[in-house]
Amino acid sequence: MQIAILAAGQGKRMNSARPKVLHPIAGRPILAHILDTARSLSPRKLCVVYGHGGEQVRAALAAPDVLWAHQAQQLGTGHAVAQAMPLFEDQGSVMILMGDVPLIRPATLAALAAAAGPDRVAVLTVLATDPKGLGRIVRDEAGRVVRIVEDKDATAEERAIREINSGIFCVPAGRLRGWLGKLSNHNAQGEYYLPDIVAMAVAEGIEVIAQQTEHEWETLGINTKAQLAALERIHQHNLAAALLDAGVTILDPARIDIRGELICGRDVEIDVGCVFEGRVELGDDVKLGAYSVLRNVKVGAATRVAPFCHFEDAEIGPSGVLGPFARLRPGTVLAEDVHIGNFVEVKNSQIAAHSKANHLAYVGDATVGSRVNIGAGAITCNYDGANKHRTIIEDDAFIGSDTQLVAPVRVGKGATIGAGTTLTRDAPADALTVSRARQTSFTGWQRPKRLDKK
Ligand code: UD1
Ligand code: CA
Image (tube, rainbow, N blue to C red; front, side):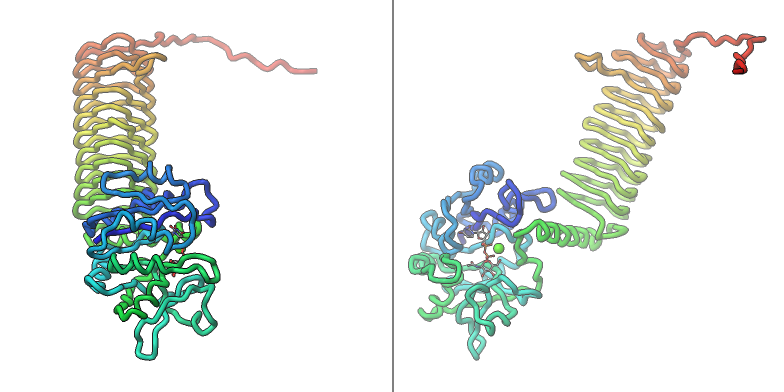
């Protein structure tokens, strides 16, 4: 099998400077999805026909197994396939995929290839809800496919046909080469239409199979931002459905966005509005509150995340308690039963088991031991304007509220730092360290009185 993906069109109706096939579905270019699906068929050759925004498309999707055929002028889908033919051999067949139809499934393509066999033409069709603008499958009285007519060339009677051409074909390579050479552009759009090969095959007595798929969404193309958004929702719905099947509780499958890989253990619960990017792993019994964004994160079993959290490139241990409004930045590693509460930011820090920073703290470039309590408003001053320095807090330390830990600095095991301390030197183990002006009270002091104005 050899595969050509047609992706030279401009996508004018997207109203965007970005080439159409680079717009994202689930965070990845449309074309990347189609390339992955194509690869799942293990083709001997995989060729993308590109044109508009060419260099940008090639740069974004370059891979050792992808061949590129340039179509300088978009003269039609038949002309586009012709640009790939010099790269293909006459043995076997050529499958043609549309660069703007991203949700087609591997199983559907495999079935199409099987229907085509070595010497038939197979076209993937569907009964469209709204066939407007699409090519119609014309059959004779016996139900045999005769030809495909484009919407703009169709008679009123033909326009009433609901079975449409998905644009996806599987064709014997040698015959395809011959037919492409004979295409004409005498039609309403002045283009070389790939679907015209159907009538040519019929004329030569080659069997044409119209293979209907039951899922219209697989064949939907993207021409506008509205269609991009619609397909994104369909794709997300499919991803959510697969998770539900696997036993994940998703409170509303219509309100989840997975832009990468989401791996869930048993009895995971995900509330509405969560966004997953990159690779996210949720352990058994994890409960994720509403409206959180997780990017490249591993969450240990039984951890609870309250709403409105943002985690990126972080690892969270089991039985953690996080949020609401917690932020974990790259390089954060939390051990078992760590609590990170509201408006606490952690960056490039390791926090050992049972430690807590429950409110309004910044922990940056720190190594924090076990059972440490970091009070409200405590911050590491890790940056001196030129370099970053580490703060080390040993096991069982207690960091009072509103403390500034001016790094590099170390808080010894079991040390207590009094509230409001600006710690510029190491604090010894087990002692109370406090830096703060001594509290004074003035008895007999009188509040100023307001002078009466005349
Ligand atoms: C095409 C089919 C139509 C089918 C529909 C399904 C033709 C003539 N019509 O129509 O029967 O129902 O798809 O979606 O084939 N492309 C190129 N070079 C070109 C022209 C197109 O690479 O010169 C690429 C486009 O980038 C796109 C794909 O081919 O990815 C389809 O082209 P498009 O112009 O969208 O065809 P439709 O009018 O949708
Ligand atoms: Ca199209």
